[in-house]
Length: 221
Image (cartoon, helix red, strand yellow):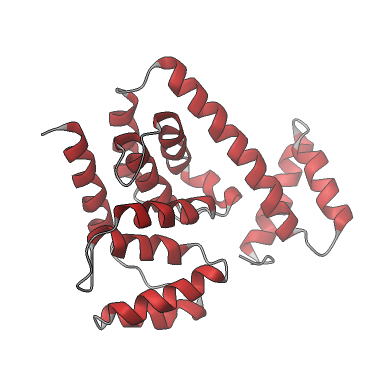
């Protein structure tokens, strides 16, 4: 199978296997219901409302609809890729994996191998670390296989650049999410950043504080 064809089949297979899991966000329940009833036009409208409200799962779900061409509409890979990027930036692991594959293969736009591999690295982040970036769970086995396959087509220099980009994204995202989590206190935020940037016990203490607040849902998604 031609490499680009294989990548497109990979994306579609991932979307199909992931399914359309119902959203935990009450604002998007109506969109999920519209999908289950085959009312795709309504679903698109409702998902767009959720996206405008900053929800992370909605752009992934809407992107999946555009990628497959559901509801009598033609597939729009460019639109799908844009939506997956929105979801990926908001921490949706599945979208990160799919965006990575699309960027490497040129599906839906120009080829950008280093950016694509960056997103695959982020999607393949260890499950126990994903809470730290407020990421949603994804299909870990398939993401790992994507990463291994894509890695064979990149040079060592490209992979090194991708790792640098991934590290920069994580640093930026940690800071942004910490601002949400410690929104009620500027001093708490500053304390977190200072401790997190330290080594040893102080760093572990900062992560423990962050974890406790995430588990208690003391932040705005």
